[in-house]
Length: 335
Image (cartoon, rainbow, N blue to C red; front, side, top):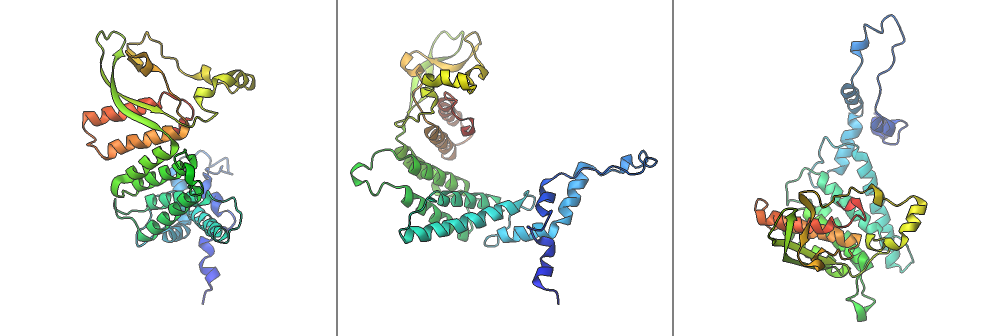
């Protein structure tokens, strides 16, 4: 009978040309005969038909990858592109996480503490690819995710510093933020609110949702009550936009200054770019690092998760959080 290698010949992901066929876009070949070029021009395969041929030729390989990614009877979305890379990432990260866990148990020095966080991220991506119903997470993936985040919290916690646990811990805040987003994507109870609040406390972010009188338009005569989010970082990163003024000349010398590329919105426009508050202190922009900006967006997401989405008050509160984040231009990936 056929051997195992013969059965897996057509689905070997490391076979020469397999990955290349998945990534490249096959172009129609040129006709060798000049006499039949005009007659066969209409018969050249289109981009859609060419991609269909490529997918059909790799169908056994594609289905085998989907079968490997299935968890507790839940299959991945069949129209996903290149699932092999997710399977490869899951295998690499899970193996490295196990090696790091063994080294930590043996008290060996290692520099792979962050591998557990990347392993957790791959688990979140894996679950989001499955066709499971909201709130019905696969038990096997759920257990692995809890173990990965528990290891992350233990590795980045301040257990050794019992005298000053209140000081900010940005690494632990990042882990808590990621775990809250995982609970949101997995539709768990609370949708990550508990971890968002913990991330805010560990990062040292001060947030206050309040109101103040202000104007939205140029010709507005009477100031109206506006919702306002006051936010200030305890830890200000050196590359923050608030501290960039001292090195602006250096950036101009290196060609890294992008201030001239920003769109200027003058006061002549009818709708003001920012709400102009009567109290000048409210118009000042406090320092806010990139991590705290991400936490603010998570708190904005929490407002959406725990309030009716069609209510005007919900949109107003979410807009106040977004307006506070848009005051900074440190990292456009945050948006």
